Image (cartoon, rainbow, N blue to C red; front, top):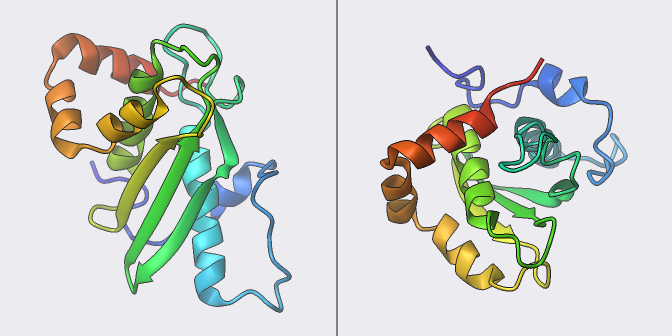
Length: 167
């Protein structure tokens, strides 16, 4: 089954379906270039994909807990069909033991749902929001570590449970 985003174009219906993108300020349409508009639409799409991920310890979503915020997502166009997405998050407490797992969930959700070979992804913990932010940021951006983590059946099951869509 192919991803709904396989076309490589942001689904305007998905981006427009969520009413609140408080941190993503639309430009004046007359001043917005098609490239800027495309980046903004992808920015909204990335947030839409991430907002409903369930927290590993709590029943709430990451957006409900203010872990994922639209203003911490930036998308830049690198080429005709290539984008760079920078995704920040804020753990609920500065000593959160599951921050790495949350970052892993964010990465896996986007890898599974964004068009293949269209995005370069960079994840980061908002500076000052976690005691080991630099180390965790390094781990979740290391593709080999991510692949190794997803080979662990227990960890894969935990990630899959966090990514289950709720209706």
